[in-house]
Image (tube, rainbow over all chains, first blue to last red; front, side):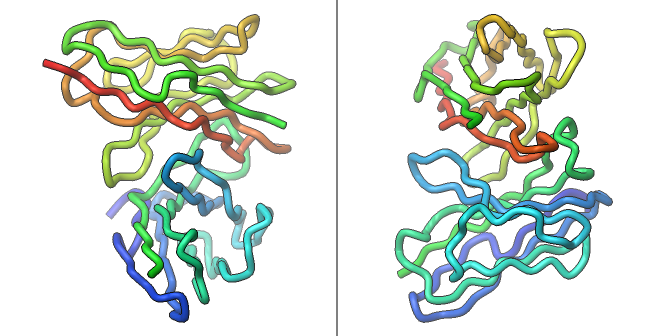
Length: 114
Length: 114
């Protein structure tokens, strides 16, 4: 399979739960990103990884914990979330940190916190 | 800080009519500029990008965009809209040291009437 794959597509979790979002890319890219897309708000960059190293944390609360074990996989570990964290979480990848490549996005995980 | 403005939240056009979606950006240097499209429940797909050279860029699905530095604009156009073009369209500028951190506009929802 090619492209960027995100699992699960939908997730409902309680505020006391712990869950993880998974992102996998088969494009040979070296940079990976997490974005949050909330209703009526622009997409917000959360984290950037380059060659498995985190290069950006955009003031994201610690209840979101990213993990990048290799250049092909990216996780977002979730714990004690709030209802306002309900959103579409999008993973993206790019060849590297040079901006002229643009991103390839996954289809996202629709998260609902109850 | 870099920013992107998409003045139109919703646009409705008739099938077969021409389309122009507006995008204005704020950025000090020569920007990397992108247009993405998002269908309901899906991730974002890259339509086209500009980072240097010819200011009129061609993209997929018959779209084009023109970079106008004097107006800080990067408007998206299509000469004849198809019903399948109904979606949400996002303009983005590459921010950060490498231009890889995309800053998105709020999006324009395109409706196509038959």
